[in-house]
Image (cartoon, rainbow, N blue to C red; front, side):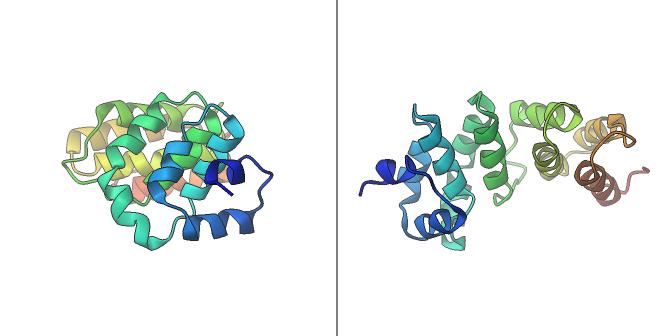
Length: 169
């Protein structure tokens, strides 16, 4: 069975892990942009379970992954792609201000799901940590988050990143 046909089916966690262990990363990533949202979302889900051996590919294609996270209108796609990006090392050379902006806006938006906000906070820190002025912007964004109404996952990420930045909470 072809990968696209496989991803069009109803899948469970075990199916996704098995597919991630054997699938071609390039082909899976291409299918994250499929017109069929089920196929695209399942492909993104598979990307989150890729083996450690795929990390080199992810690093080389980080810019494409970032562009996909920015350009998609599908919330599940964005969340899953951003989760995959947690495996990427953000060096000074991998600075995308448009992606930092997306992460900061997502982190501060109380209407976004807690999981997506938490991932956005982590990714914002990984990018901003190389630049004191960006850390200041991250700090302001984190302090803007209402800790009385934010879910525990968001509060935890917020506080952890403020600690990592040696910033007062």
